[in-house]
Amino acid sequence: MAKVDAKAVAAARRRMDAIVAEAQRRVEPALKAALRKAMTRIAAALSERDTWSVAEMETLVSVVRGALEDAGVYELSERFGIVAKAITKAAADVAPLSAAEGNLLAAAVKARYEGWEATVDRQIIDWIRDRMISQSVEPLDYMTLADEISQHLDETVVQYAGTYAETAISQIERDAWIATGEALGAEYWRWDGPPPIDTSHPECEEYWNHVFTREELEAMGENSTGLPVWPTLGGWGCRHTPTPVDPETAVAERGEK
Image (cartoon, rainbow, N blue to C red; front, top):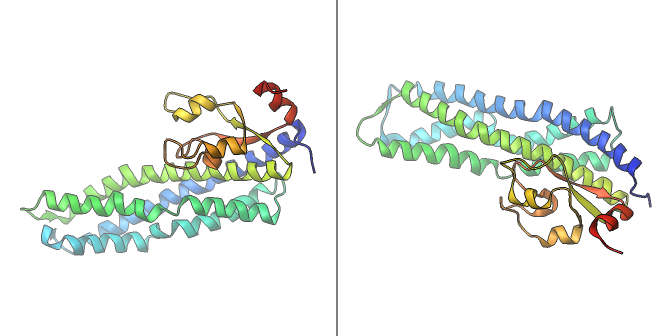
């Protein structure tokens, strides 16, 4: 079994840097493009009527959902599984990836979007119902309604898209590091990444740069965002990843004998 040493970790880091750079180039722009395409389709669909009343609320919901579906917004889980394969192929030009690693990374991206449809419905469909009920007397002209929906989509779901993309990219890096560490027989893992900032999760502020065993990380359960500490560390929006640490360094830093 290969030894976890500085050279092995440095080689893995070159690979991770290539993967993350390619993910950042591909994932978030494609995700936001799909959402902005949905805005255009929603506006076109709403223009079929001059006004929309609360009595037509469920028809309106159906029209908006149809526009989101036509734009491919609800299919992002599948789409980004495909994008992940392109990411791994591009990264292989810098540091070759095995087929198993490529499949792992594809699954990692796809998994991050499994709750996406519920997020869209909560942020857009539920908001439309609340908006229509709140103005229950006068119908809204389609241009006003289209502008409001587009603005809300841009202010909420597009922002969520950025968080999903950021979390997906981080999890690509985490899963690949974990695969690398396990292949090297790693027993210890560092809570690695940039130093905490004002908006960092409490776990990241407390544990950043500390060394743990996998069992210790698993025993922490869920983080403050509701995701498991292993392997997501701080969870949504976390910039950190578990990286393997050689036993000598780990024992020294942990004060073990």
